Length: 272
Image 1 (spheres, rainbow, N blue to C red):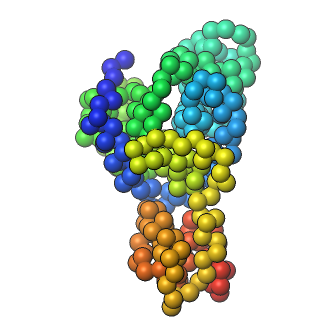
Image 2 (cartoon, helix red, strand yellow):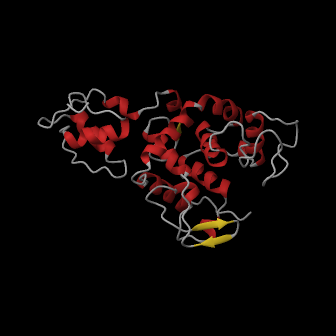
Image 3 (cartoon, rainbow, N blue to C red):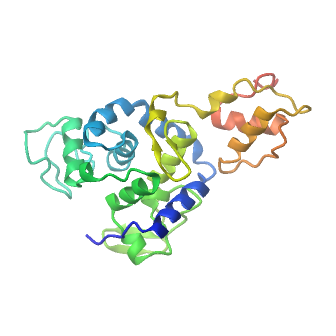
């Protein structure tokens, strides 16, 4: 299968795209529960990934795209675990008899991709592997369109794609949620952390999955500014469709934005 090298230029591009990624308006309510489901199953993913040196979040992202987070499906391609895979790659796992456990099948899928030998689990390295999992057809043959396998439902993808295997359509719209977009949401929720250079801080996996809990103490106050309210506004402005003045005054617009991402208004807001 044709591939693209992970060059310094591509690394920088992945970092830039991730930093500037914004979930499309209207999609946040869909993206957040999916990210939370992945994070809720991180221990199960870690049981598979830790012995192989593969981050749990990578496995969760592939599980979403290939199996819709269904633990009754093969990680290879979403075929049911009640039999060997039928679609490409067919006949997996080679060993054992069906029905297969999700864990055994997932290990087979990851080892088939030789991911247990892969060591670059930085942010660029992970995004490169996610793109490789689906193929580099976009990057190699249609570089004007970023792969929706990564960037679907974000500001980085609008239209253009493979309507069927090998059939390109510039007007086709892939409506699935991209894995990089989900990874971005996991980072926003505090389930994963990346340093400025893209290094993964796996210790974040043991933290509560809510970046917003830090701001529960911010009170509704449209008159007086405080540093934590300003920090909250800065965080909220990272969410697509939210545009707040970062003045530290937690008024109606800030409280409404907080409600949008958490389902609750700031303390002291009469609407809550």
